[in-house]
Image (tube, rainbow, N blue to C red; front, side, top):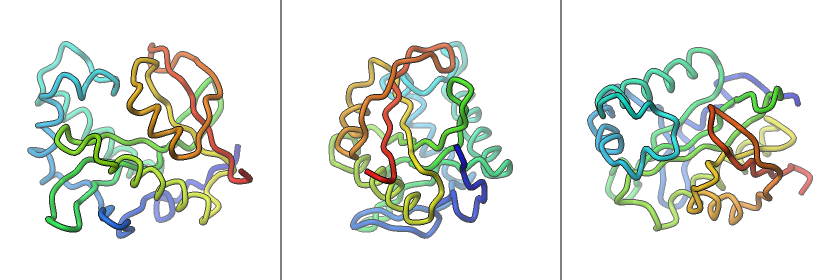
Length: 182
């Protein structure tokens, strides 16, 4: 699969939706995201070590995001509420290798207070539209832990279909996919 690996294209900095602004994650967002990492329900599906402290998990997350930026592998964008400038979560396009195939994923993680309000779907739809409008890939996936039914609902509402179940990061995951051609 051909994926354009140009971070000026893969990152949605400056893009917006009706309620959200996409911007670069900044080190100053650490304390906000630490709240996410202190919430056990938030951590169930994001492949962070269960043995480290919330602060260590947050650092690992930030290191991953900034490494993706530097390595031109896409990355999570901070999601900021347009109405009140609040930190809602993160969403973005990420290059991953799944079952030996390079894929472009729509990833999303929201702060607990903003779940169930349609923000994940709104952000994921923007990522999908942006990727296809800019010809970044012929198809997009979402890698979702098999127990994460809330994320599966977002993927389905974003037009994705369950393609397969596989192992990823030593976890059983469902791969949801949507093709540019429909």
